[in-house]
Amino acid sequence: MLMNPVNAAVAPRGRTVLLSSVSSDSHTWNLVFLQLLLEEMGHRVINLGACVADELLVQECSAIRPDLVVISTVNGHGQVDGARLIGKLRSDPRTRDVPVVIGGKLGITGGAEADDMARRLVSAGFSAVFQDDAEPAEIGRFLAALDHPVPRHPVAAS
Image 1 (cartoon, rainbow, N blue to C red):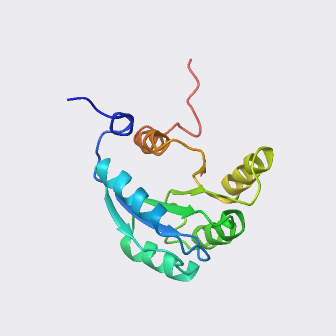
Image 2 (tube, rainbow, N blue to C red):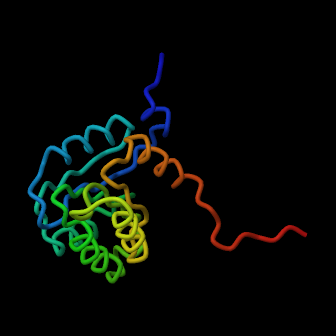
């Protein structure tokens, strides 16, 4: 059996993934695509839908205790809404350590400015940022990396 690049990027692990958009984003096709992609990878997806208020997302994340939160944005407000959301997630002790990624259209411009936005979002607390031109296999590689975290304080060889 041939595996497509998405399946080859990560073996199914059965993680629970909480999926949503930023609060101002009413688009749903991106959420359906991501849900199908993540389910194809073998994960259980809880899709909260579009226009989910930050407080509701924090509440649901606290109740569900997902292995990963995936935030999608296509309306160009990802940088502003995402920074606010991750601040709330990281300030709550119940959601502080949950891996959270954001992807899509982060702003209304591209190029180097989009790279800057991505760096700011990671600095604000996102575990990873996937820009709108990211390949689907990139999320698979990110999920695979969760299985093999890089030690923060490597032990020096003697």
